[in-house]
Image 1: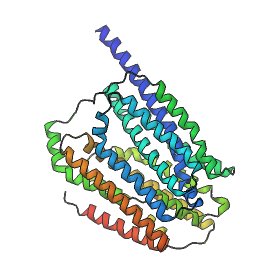
Image 2 (image 1 turned 45 degrees about the vertical axis):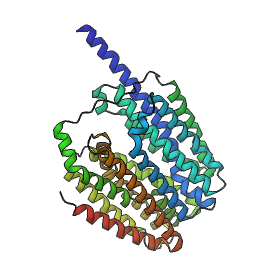
Image 3 (image 1 turned 90 degrees about the vertical axis):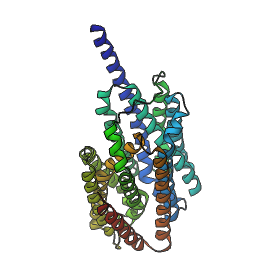
Image 4 (image 1 turned 60 degrees about the horizontal axis):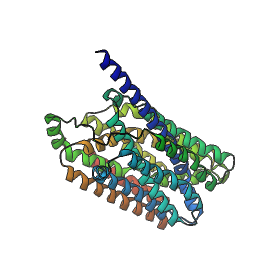
Length: 396
């Protein structure tokens, strides 16, 4: 009995160490990502990008994400060591971001942002796999690494705000992301090398499998509707330029900070919702908030104190929307990925969602460029309303 207790203590220490290491790696990676994301639309426009180009960049990121979801199990099985996959993702993500600062045109931004998105999602998925395979079950329930990730989101937005405040250029801020990126790569390299490469045992019971078959279609539709209805952050940043003067451009990362704080403050409660009907209700409320947000951006406005307050409120709505939808959407994705039912089907559906999201972003960017922000956000409002009605009247 004593030997068993000692072994248990050793395993707990290993789990704690791996948990903290995973969290610190995610912290530095996400910190650098948020710094870049907050100002990427501004930088892209400054080197000749258009709303259509921003739509292509946003759509490509979604496409890469969902293709990776679709092929992840196959991709993961090709590597005998999960640390290799983690290192690959970390290098792709953290090496590509600072290179964006040297981009002479939007084509380079597109290529490097796509590489960053691919690497970041490989890193995140690998961290989760490594953690679940090597940590004790009780540690899976309490993910302190997710707290560190959240901290990285907030600090990343704050640093972008601070550097703009002290008059750093967009290129300087983006290049600065190399520092946390290097730290993350070093931590991956020194991480314990003897990581398990087998998947954690499946926990699906026969009842859960039956329920998964019954609800599979609804889960796919819910994920798809949320993704298609979501407002691309790049368009939101681009529209925000009309609400603040050039001298006050540093407010835009601060607006992002507000949005992220709201998201982090309320997302944990949303994450606890497991009933499918309640999840549907939360998603519906989130889409209603997004409609109000889009309508707020329809009308022209003169730059003033009022416009600054209004755009702050818009980002507050955006953070609330994310808090109500992203945790549920991620939960549904994880259920589809980890389930043993319809594996070929979810591969196909994830890829289809990614293609539709790419087309949506590209079309919205084209509308923004050819017509105006007024036509764009009217179109977005109508489109979100359609997604909302589809969700509400979806059969239970």
